[in-house]
Amino acid sequence: MDWISTAYWVAIASVTLFTLLITWQAFEHRRYCRSRSRHRPRQTIHQHLALFVPCKGLDADLEANLRPLFEQDHEDYEIVFIVESECDPACAAIDRVMAEYPGVPSRRVVAGISDGTGQKVHNLLVATEELPKDIDVLVFVDADVRPPRDWLRSLTSRMHREHVSTGYRCFVPKRNTLPNLILSALNGSVVPIMFPGKHHLIWGGSWAITRETFLESGLREAWKGTLSDDLIATRVMAAAGRRVSAEPMCILPSPLDVSWSEMLGFVRRQLIIGRCYTAVHWYALLFGTAVMQTVYWGSLAALAWGLAGGAEWTWRPAVALAVVYTLHVWRAYLRHNASQYYLPYRQDDLAVARRFDTWLGPVAGVFGLVGLVSSAFTRRIVWKGIAYDMEAGGAIRQIVRPPQPAVAPAGAALGESSSSRRAA
Image (cartoon, rainbow, N blue to C red; front, side):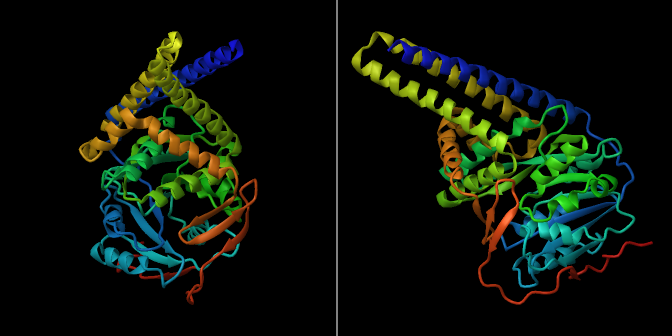
C-alpha cells in the first residue's frame, strides 16, 4: 500500500502547486483590472470604427442587447448587422432597433448560406469583403452581450499602439437555477487569463483589430473553411507576432437562462471546438481537471470513510481537502472581487452566482470534467441548428442543415437606416 500513499501525496502536491499557480493568476487578474479601471481613457482617438454584429434567430433579449450598440459614447462609428437569410427572425428585430436610432449609421447585410465554412465565419467574410476606405478599426461583437456605454471607447482607445484588443464575457443568470449557476461558474473560471502580457486568446464576442493588421495578417484567408472565428484569429495573430491586448474593462455581461440540456450542450460544444483548434490547451485542461477533481472528491470520500471507521489515517485526506478547498475559495474570491471593477453595476445580479462559485465551485467542476470527457469522442457540434463535422485541425469536413427556405443572394445589403451612408 506504500505506493498508493506515495501516489496520493504526489497527486496532492501537484494539485496544490497547480492551484497556487492559477490563484496567482487570479491575483494578477484582479490587480490588472484595478489598474485598468483607474486609468480609463478620458478621450477617444479619432478613428472611424465599423462594428460587425452577426445575428441568427430571435433570442428573447435580442433587442435589449442591440440597443446599447447604438448608445456608445464614441463619436464616429457605424454598425453592420449580418444575417444568413432574409427569413431569419432576427431581421425584424434588427430593423426595429435601427429605426429607433436614425442618427447612428447602420445597415443589415444578408450573407447567404455557407457551403464550406461555419455560418458565423461566412457572415463575417461576406461583411468584410469590401471594406470602405474610411474604416480604421474593425470591431466584432456578438448579439448575446449587453455592453455599457463606454465599451467601444475602452476597447479601441489604445488601438493606435496595439494591433488587436479583446474582451470577454461574464454570464449573468436571469434566474438562479442550477444550470445557470454551473455554467456561470465554469465560464468565470476562464476570466483570470486576462492579465498583462501578449498573445492572449481572442474572444469573438468582443474584440477589435486595426484595418492594416486585418488585411496584412491574412486572417480572411485563414477563416475560410473553418468554424471558429476567434481561435483562428488567435492562431493567425500569434503566427504573425502581433500583440493581442486584453481589456478587462471590456468583459461584457451576457444574460443567461439555460436548461440542463442547453448547459451541457454549450459546455460540450465549446470543448469540442477547443479540442479541434487548440489541442494542447484541451489536453492540459483535461489532465488538470481530472487530477483536481479526483483529488478533491477522492479526499472527501476517504475522509468520510475514515471518519465512519475511526481510522488513524483520517487526518491525511482531511489536510488535503482543507488545502485544496481553501485555495479554491481564495481563488474564487479574488476572481469575483475583480468583477467590481468591470461590472460594478451588476454586482447585485451576480450575488447568488458569486456565492455558488465560491462555496460550491467543485460541483461545477464535475460538469466541466463530464464535458471534457464527452468532447473527446466526437468532432461534431450543432450550433444554431446547423451540424458541423470537423477534422483534427479544425477544418470543416461536412455541414448538415435542416431544410431551408429560399434566401436572398449573398452580400445583399438590406434594411439600411436613413443614415446608413456617412456624410462625405
